[in-house]
Length: 481
Image 1 (tube, rainbow, N blue to C red):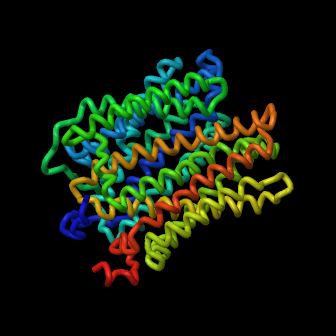
Image 2: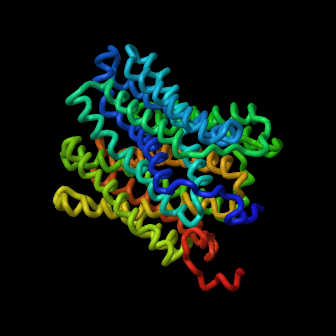
Image 3: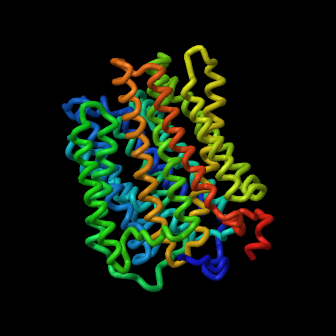
């Protein structure tokens, strides 16, 4: 069982304002998150330029996810070995190079290979950025810093399609990738100036076999989840998922015998980490499903244009920004356990309201409801991503972050798969050739029900969990002290 770490001695003194550090990392993550979805709008135009059918372009999306799945588990070990600042800068540089290659692509194969390079940079940016944050910011400032960090993760995927549409309409598709270059260069310079270097004192041998097993497993699972969200790919998708599960079992068998596995399941012995991972994974299924279901319903059944539906869905981004101003105060008042329980129920129920949206609802009312959904979900993920490290020792921050980031990516993709499966299943049962309101309602209600299951794990947090991070004083503090 992991024991609580010393709250001060294990953390480097913060020499830079935590907001500066958080915003530098957030900017890099926003670039990565935006790029992950901005491409979708431009695929038809790119397919015409490459001389291929538009459905064939989906491989440019899945190749990026494949690269993420393979390399995210290795991020913690690489950071410990070479230093978090060095790896973070290298990740930004690789992402910039990948972006330039994508913009220069003259064929689908060229684009796919370039996206794989981009994915390598993105796979290191996400978890290593969090490692930098965990090692640079005092625990009392961690909630505020994490709230800044999570804004791009929530806004990026939502802004991607409308930004992509604007670029394709008024510029040309290569600018989708060129916009990463100035952002990345500024980020590289700021990391060099403001971020300190952190290396592990003792570095274990790299788990090569575990890297291969986890890469095949996670790559197959993510690829399978993504393909299952399309039509006509179910048999191949299920085959990939089956392969992923087989290699997952093989990895678990290997990890139990390796002294320093690349994904260390002994982290689940930590009460706060395991509760955050499981509850957060269930909630991320809903978060992954919502951007898939909502724009589809607004366009197919409401008859809205892609641009109009994009503007409505941006309400969740507005809510996420508004949450930043109150997250620290709410956690100080309620504590992590109470906040996660009650806010989790509200956040899940909010997305459940989407099941009842109909064309006769005023669009401003829908916008306000979605703004509330973004507010409560942003608060929930800030709390999850902070409390996960409550009793993780400083020397295990890197491996814990790569483990946590791996499951985050997996669950968001699973959310799309679950949403697509529920929508298709309802259509088959009700004999609909295209999705109707009732089909969307079924999908929304079930994915929100999955998110509500997280309540059982939220109740497993200690009433005093994360007190030094939130500033909350629990009535049980004296008893546990």
